[in-house]
Each structure stands twice: as structure tokens, then as C-alpha cells.
Amino acid sequence: MAGKDRDAPDPAPVLTPTSFALLGLLNLQPWTTYELAQQMDRTLSRMWPRARSKVYEEPKKLVRHGLARATTETVGRRPRTVYRITPKGRRALARWLAQSADGPVFESEQVLKVFFADGGGRLDTLRTLHDLRAWVHERTMVNVEVGRAYLDGSAPFPSRIALNTVVGRLLDDLLECLDTWADWASGVVETWPDAPGEAPADQASLEATLRQAEARAERWLGSGSSPPAQP
Amino acid sequence: MAGKDRDAPDPAPVLTPTSFALLGLLNLQPWTTYELAQQMDRTLSRMWPRARSKVYEEPKKLVRHGLARATTETVGRRPRTVYRITPKGRRALARWLAQSADGPVFESEQVLKVFFADGGGRLDTLRTLHDLRAWVHERTMVNVEVGRAYLDGSAPFPSRIALNTVVGRLLDDLLECLDTWADWASGVVETWPDAPGEAPADQASLEATLRQAEARAERWLGSGSSPPAQP
DNA sequence: AGCCCAACACTACCAAAGGGACTATCTTGG
DNA sequence: CCAAGATAGTCCCTTTGGTAGTGTTGGGCT
Image (cartoon, rainbow over all chains, first blue to last red; front, side):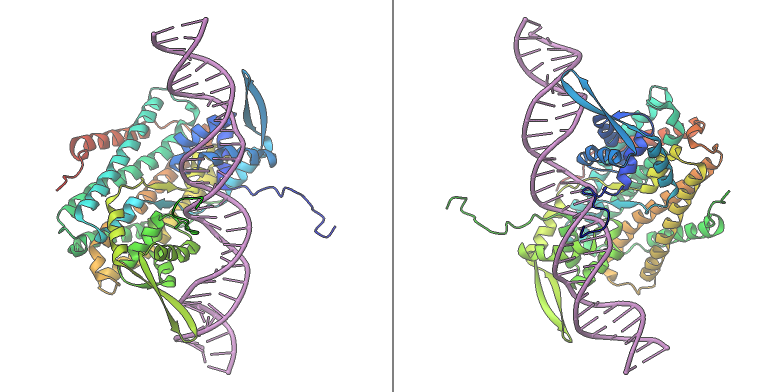
């Protein structure tokens, strides 16, 4: 008619990284939406945090694209939907894994508050740093439980232990990094006057940070900057 | 009338952390919206990344709440708006700094791809890790420049050197953490078979991570778990 | 035997954020 | 003198976050 020859009423919403996060889970085994939401909360949220409501929408999108199939079962009179990946879905996942991705995103209201510490008092900053450490500790407790479950073999997906070890290492290192920093920063802030705006410069720290960054840059140029060999 | 005694047509949109991020910048000096957007890109985006369009909206919100005032100047025939903080704004900023905040958020499509590496080939994972290191290196270059500017005194806001040193330390530590991990992970993945799903477990690494987490937990219970003393 | 509560299985809605397209003026190097 | 790039924004649409709400089922307790 007046438009193009494709007059599709539902123009197939585009697949986002979140879609592939769900598809990746479906690649492990079939799940109900509820279970997918749980996995999202418990593990995926550490590297790809998304709202629960999205987790219920994305699998429908996957089905529309033919990357997953939905089967409805019933538990008593209550229906539930089980999703499983299709061969086309597996191929799409592999293609996604071969594409390049955006860099990481870090955001922290707490760090923002430290950055603007000169608008408040010294104790505000100390409390913010303390809250950050408390948050890290809470996360740590969960990680320790998961790690122990893998070591004594009671964890689900024992075949994923190698992958989980690698990624888990990063997630714990990031927590370690935050904890160490918050501890150090508390010590620094304690020596400050009551108005953080008048805090003296710490030239030595600045130089140490700069040296770390420069050393990293050299390491990169020396060893890692060439891409992995193609077959 | 029929409603409450407040029949405000525009119910004063609520202030978000992003609002306070802008307010914090205004606490340093007056800025034009364009300059605010630049500051957001160059520095705040490392701990509170927000889209450019938001940066143009938030100051208007601040004005509606009486936390900032806008004055329009002209450069030739082109008008521009300069925002400056009000005393009420300074008080609001101090109140915000005294409140507790949410924990940090980390998200990375690249790490997600490593997590689902078993859906693709070994080389995909190696390339993803390489891309991550390249991204870290790019960021590092910018940080090194900023750091050097502070050391030779050519940076803006010399009075903020203490604050910037503390926060800059964290931001560089996080980059260091990502780089070290990606380098280590590349070495691990290189020993894997072509299908990462069949990679052998690395019990030693898992145990090392667990020990790190447990040590951190003990450090917290031993020293830091009590909140800072109130005056 | 009956009841309560936690886990299960979602849907609906709206504010906030993302992000690109678009306009227009000013400055500066070649 | 002219083009390119910096300045100074506006507009709009989509995606996401996050909360509230609805009802079901199974297990434990009394």
C-alpha cells in the first residue's frame, strides 16, 4: 500500500544484551520465568543487573525471534511457562559471543558523595565509607557461601565450575578493591579537618596512583596490545 | 476545592542522585549547562554516568526547587544560561551527604560474555578479554593526563586536589583490578580446549578466591564493623 | 481438619534514563 | 574568507527501573 512491501504490524523488537543474558541462561537448561528471575537476582545481577520486570519480558522476545520455545505446564490449576533454547537460539548466542561489546560501567552514589565531601562534614564522609564497607561485607558473605557450595560439590551446574571460578575471581577482586580503598580512605579522612574542603593535598598518594597507572600502560604496550591470533 | 489545599499543576519532580551530582558541581562554581555536560563526561561519568540529555534537564529541576538560580547571558547573539547554587541548595546538598546511599553497581557486557563462554569458542573469549584490556588502557591514558596536570599544578580547582586524590585512587584501582584479572584470565583460557564448556576445574584458584573473601570478612569483623563515632 | 505463610507465577504501570537527531551561533586556523 | 570544530542547547522516542498488585500452591503448625 502506501508503505513499504513489509507491513509487519509487530516489527520484532531488537535484541539487547539483556536478551542474550537470558538466552545464555537458557543455554544451560530449560527454566521457568520465575527461575530465570531468581538466577538473574542471585548470579547475573553481579555483572548485568536488570529489573525483575524485564526478566519476564525478554523470554517472550526470544520466542518472537525463534531463539527459544515456550511450553506451558500446569502446577495444580496454576499455569507456568517453561522456556528452552532452539538450535537457532544457540547459533544466535554464538554470534553474539563473537561480537565486540561495550566497556564496563561502574556507578556508585557513595563514591559520588565522597567526591563532593566538601559540601558536608568529615563525619558524613566517614559514615559513607563505613556504609560502603558494610555493603561489601554483605555481598562477600553471599559469595563465600556460593564458593563453599562449589568446593564441597553441592552446587548446581558442576560443569560450570571453571567458568564460575574465572568470573567469580573478578567479582571478588572488585569487592576486595572497594574494601581496601574504603579502609584506606577512612584513615585518610580521619586526619582531615572538620570541613573536607580544607583538607591538605597528599602528593605522595597522587604520585603513587600515577605510577600505578603508568606501569599498567607500559605492561599493556609491552605484552598485551596485540590481539589474539586468528586461526 | 475537590483536591487537597495544594493544587500545584507541576508537582515538583523529585530530586534524584543525578540532581545532587549536578548540585555538587554547582557547589564548586557557577557553570553553564554546556560546561556541566562536559564535566559530567570527563569526570563524573566515572562514578555516576548519565546521558547528556539528562544533564540539560536536571539544572532546571534544581531551579524549580529553589536550589539553584539561572541567569541568562549572551555571547554575541547567542544566549546561554549560567547556573549558580543558592544557600538553600547548599543546605540541601549537606542533607543529601548526610543520608545513606545505595551500594555500587557494576555492569559489563564483556564479563557477561566470559560468563557464557561455553556458548562460543575459546578464541571468542580471548578476544573479549583483549577488548576489555584495550578499554582499560584507553581510560588509563586519560587518567594519567589528568593526574599529571594536578602534579604540575596546571589543573583546574587546585583546592580539590585532596578529594580528587582519594577518589582517583579508587577509580585507578578498579582499572588495575580489571586489567590484572583480564591478563590472568587470558592465561587461564589459553590452556582450555576449544570448547570452553569442557574446561577443567581449577580448584586452586577457587580456593584462593574463597580465602581472600574469608580474610576480608574477618578483617571487617575485627576492625571496621562498628560505625564511626557520633559527636 | 483447618489455617497461615512463604514460595510461586506472573501483569501493569509510570517515572527515570538512554541516546540519537536536529538547530543554530561563535571562534579559529589555514 | 571559509570550513571545521567548539559552544549551547532542544526534542523526541524507546528502554529500563522499580514498585504495586493479583492470585495460586504446598508445607508446617495447631
